[in-house]
Amino acid sequence: RQQQKNRMDHLAADLARRAQLPEQSGERFQIHKAGTFEPDLGSPPEGSVRSVFFYNADIELGTDAGLHLFEPRYRLMVQRAMWMAERRRQIIFLPNFQRYIGSHGDVGALAHITSYRPIRDGRGGMPRAEVTLRFTDRVMVLFHWEEPHTEGLHECTFSVLPPLPPPSSLLERLLDCLQKSSDRRYTVSTKEGFLNIHAEPVSSADGVVGTLIDGDVVTELESHAGWIRHDRGWSVARLRNDRFLWLGAPAPL
View (tube, rainbow, N blue to C red):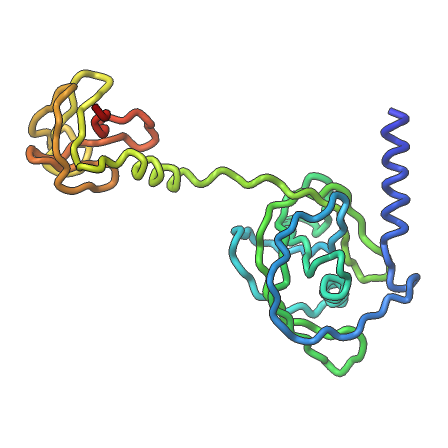
């Protein structure tokens, strides 16, 4: 327990040294020129610091979003991202539907600034900004703090999370492709010894017009949503959410 406390004290002290508070460090930035940029897809080093942008919306990785940033804290956030090389033009996009306060374990997205346009508003200081963000990775907040004298800018360390498995619809399509017969011939192999033939590709007792038995071979005329039409009608090749193959490509001799 004492070792854990010492580790947290060391981390807090290290973060305090790296905080770069504008009032204390004389933080000043030139105004970055407008431009477009490629995302830096390298893995951020462990313990990297990024500013947090709170926004109540779910996002999808691989997509872009355009934002007009005008709050003083987010003007500073953009300038830090653009000018501090270690930040790689990145911020943490963090959906938060409660109090706009981050915490350990929050999950958000690593967002890359891929376009930037400063907008001076005649007030001096840091300009407003129009930016385009590209979301590339899911991240989890490890350590979080609000910096004083920044009108509410939040900073954090984070860890990149492994990719989520593909959606079930994609897995279904992949299974269909893997199970496709090269010569359009399929062998019946069921759990019950027979396979119904339907007039239409719909599971309905009223539409049954015959049966196939295990070992029968049919030739595909067309396919639709997991069904195969052969010379006697329609039969299901595989039920949705069932990986057991009812009509399978014949094994090679």
